[in-house]
Image (cartoon, rainbow, N blue to C red):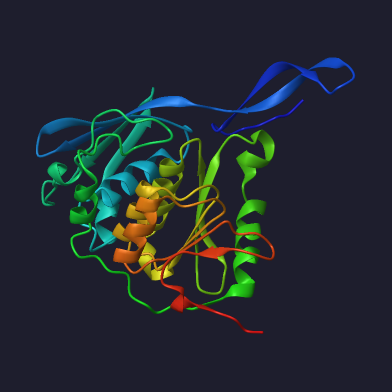
Length: 278
């Protein structure tokens, strides 16, 4: 029997058929739970979002979401030590100090989102470009093309929930040496990224200063927008990007890499950061 002590995994009895015979086994399953994110600021309480997620690292999720959506200032990570966040019974309640300005209009998000799409609340793609507010990632990092697949493999090895369940996505921040600084998993791709960004911010660090974001699946519009808001320089995706993801990466000076395999990959934008050391 699989034993677990964290909120991302449950154990269920299943009938397994292996091509010859069936048996009853205990199987590790990814937990999916509803979460209401409530924000309190200057006496006003706002239901900011209702989402489905993996119910762990919720404080990271809330911080990362508010920051990547532009609700709170993203010029400093030190402000997040002043937040009060409590999570219980399917709710995360964030109290933002009165001294800080917040801007819910910058989010444009509906109150409901799904694990696969937190962007269903946007009214137009043009809003995405406007929300970047001129954010352009600097060019301070170069990577050897030979090291990129190693980074992806390093992230895969650290995906503890995925290893047991096969049912979650992962996001990781790596430094220019290829070391994993922060990694989070969630049933939702966008949640995994928000948790990763949030864990970095709660440590008083800026994600863009670390520089490299690795995604375990495809790279869609929302994920690249979050990377752009964080001024990430390089995004490495195991899967494919979308057309809008490519357009935003190009506009924000992000090097976007997809379909990463041991001996091949596609570089969609800004290849100047990728070098060959052979």
